[in-house]
Amino acid sequence: MHDPDIIIVHGGLPGGEAMQARVGGKSIAREPGETLDAFQARAVDAAWYGEHPFVVIGGLPA
Image (cartoon, one colour):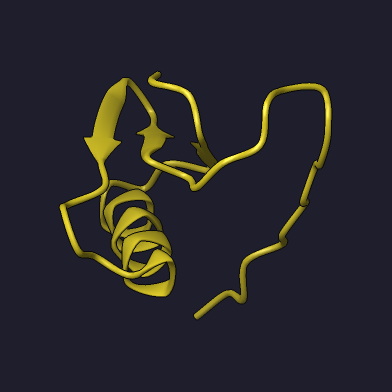
């Protein structure tokens, strides 16, 4: 299993909690009450199982 390469980009947009993720052509919304760690893990799992090379997680809707 390949460990993911992670690039974190900060700034440029208003701050706030990450509420959306983009995996390939699919948008994933953070569930009410879902922790950020659980949301990130769910988005990465979706990318991994869908064989997508990247995940974009951010605060603005995708």
